[in-house]
Length: 529
Image (cartoon, rainbow, N blue to C red; front, side):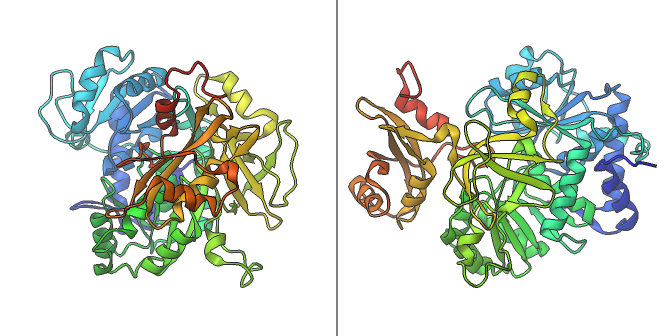
């Protein structure tokens, strides 16, 4: 008998094999895996009692929380599709996504009540609004909270997964919309199941692991943690918001063994004044993703945590992890380990990845040829929600076209050089914004930076640097330009440097370059020259 590949099998297995194991910790609330599974089943029973349609969309506007973690199993168990929303979006974005997806039910944290009140009249399909926590609320919100509704269920649904269609959509994630309207990425049961097995293999996860959820669960499962950690019987420790003090406290308190970050998070931990007061000896690895890393960042993190730290890469469209920058045995000791571990990495098990030129022809793996990363794997999305033409274009030729430009060296390591849309074309020369950013980050006064194209009457475009300095540090525009001149070719040097207090970021910590570019291109008919 062929069994469907669905993550619901992970919960069924863990309920039997690790029933008494503490599975979820959220603040002062603790649940075993038996209790967690029962709560997921109660959520499914609740949704069925509300006549959730087959493949009906259930949205969550939530910080990291046990209820959102439960939804990753409870919603598909009820036959629905989970739609987690990025909490940092604008009200208009929420309205667009909820309408585009046709969401029927919306669970949300009380902090977002004013936002939902603002857009409620625009929502076409949402028929139930549910608070995750107690709060004063208007009559259009369900009078019982999430917890009260779960307690009202006499018993949970049976954890039945045998009749699941593994190719049906289980989750719907919307892209950040940094370049256009958000697109809904459809992830199937099969995608999620196979990604989890790949991550268990990559991270060597066991029931002794304790994962701190530093990555928001609305971002492609927080990089797949609800599936792979549950599959192995590891313990989930929820973190509502990323704050350095709480990160260190939770690592020490719960003997955390692993967590993931974007580089901006890593920088904040490295500059936290009290970082040396906490016991982080339980950690065995830290994974970085979401933006480019550098060897110094990896070195500093390993010095701080005394464990393996390495970069990774993935997309919402790939469930998400595609590569990891772990050291291959044949490279040691000839290579700088920290430099290797800061690269984009090489494909995880089950992923085929290469680079194509503009005509979709494969380029050589020589470390110099720059092409678009293309991927084919079992973890590639089913497509974009209600966007067949964009789906066909992105998945043309049987490969997912990522929009990321990279080289691949003879050892198979990928190094991203830029996004297609972020490549600066100045006087006919291509300039990688990422390369310029890396040069700026080598200056000891620079905390964060972004480089964007700005219009120029002679060259068409030139690089503009936007820089955040480290606390108490001082440096002039001329100093940074001079610093870059020692590292970069003349045409790559930023023409101007603007100093700011902070950079605009998405809910996952990515710098929103579209917002930065808008300031400089306002009034221009075209956004490229």
